[in-house]
Every structure is written in structure tokens, then in C-alpha cells.
Image (tube, helix red, strand yellow):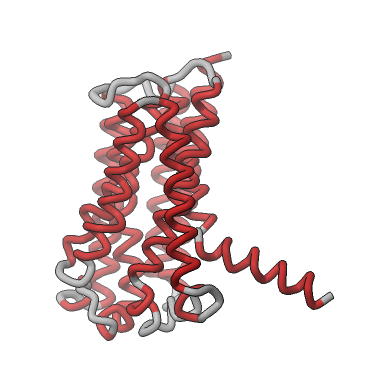
Length: 294
């Protein structure tokens, strides 16, 4: 019985280490990009999903390895596998290299461009974004780009051109949706980030001002994206109408969560809502692609 429990714990540690929920979300965005272009899923979709998952998982492990000292200083992160001692630094680093190698080998099956985009994402996340977090609040820009590139990996894996308006629109959506997520984390954990020596927007704005900035960003981004989507074929007319209705409902619910609930429940609800809405949009795009195929 103890051996079984140890085995379950070991799997749990690795699931936490690879940030499996985030890694699957990255796969979903890349698959969405693929299906926006492709009318037919073949083996390249398998290479894409596997390659992006392993790259995302490896990047997550490498990020935790790089930030193991900082993670130990914050209540939010000190329970992660490396700072908590659930896995050794060497094992974590080896796991990262193994996952990244597997991801690269799978992704290059779809061509040099998807592979190169995968490497660019890795560099942006693990070298540029991670280092800039200590220096400037503008680290959110490369951080946002990390979320914008996986759809391009999927689109190019299906044979699409990165100059197409459809993939530009969707990647822009993914970029804009990353930024308020970062700010909401700061609204909740700003003091911890400051104490750990990280540059945060909370050094310039108080909690309420950050929430107002987040809401303004979300409203303006939603309107811009609605306008942008209306000039593409990414949605059919019926899906565009549905998207418009959902967008209004989302903004109202987001405002209610962000300002109508006591903290930290309001910020928590806003974070869940913004992440759920992004996933919903990806599901709508996939459904739209399937309907177009049928």
C-alpha cells in the first residue's frame, strides 16, 4: 500500500512539474490554429499536438528550474516540486531536456517553420521573459508573445501562411488575452512578487488601479478583436453573432467579478472567467472549422 501511494505521489509531482493544465491549454491553442486552416486532419496534427505538449511541458519544467530560488521566497510558489524538495534540481533539469528534445523531434516532422517557431517560443519564455521579470514590468510583452505563437505553430503545420489575416487575428487575440492574466496575478500576489525582487506593476499602481487597468484593457481588446474578426473568414456569420453576444455577456460578468465581489474572491473569479472565456473561444473556432469541413 505505501508503495502505491509513493507511486501516485511521484506521478503527482511530475504532473505539477510540467504544469499539465497549462501545457494542454497550449496544445489546444495550437490545434485551434491548425484547424482554422486545415480542412482535413492527418498525421501532422498528431506531430503538432505531441510536439507542442512536450515543448510546453519541458519549458514549464525549465522555468521552474530557473526560478527555483525565487519560488522559495513566495507562498504562492514555495510548494512547487523543486523548492519543496519533492524532486531534485538535477532530475528536474534532466526531465526538462528530455521533454524538450522529444517535443523538438516531433514538431520538426511538420517542417522547419513550426520547429523554429517552437524554439522561438522556448527562448522568449525561458530566456527573455524569465530574465526580464526581475528588471521591468514590460516583461509582459514577451510573455504575451509566448501565448501568441502556438496558434502560428499549428497554422504553419497545416500548411498555412503566417501572413494570412485569420491567423493574425487569432494570434492577436491570444496575445491580448495574456496581458490581463499577468496583471490579475499581480493584483493578488503583488506583495509576494515585490518581496521576491521581481519588477511588478504594483510598484506604480495600487490594487484598485490595477483592476481598473485590467478592465479597460479587456473592454478595448474585446471591441478591437470583434472588429478584426468581422473582417476575416475565421467565423461564419452565425458564429460571429454568437461571439458578439458572448463578448457582451463576458464583459458584464467580468466587471461583476472584478469589482462586485470582495477580494480575493473577485480577482479569483475574474482570473477563472478570463481563462475560461479564452478556452471557449478556441472551442468555438474548432467547432466552426468542423462545421466548415462538413
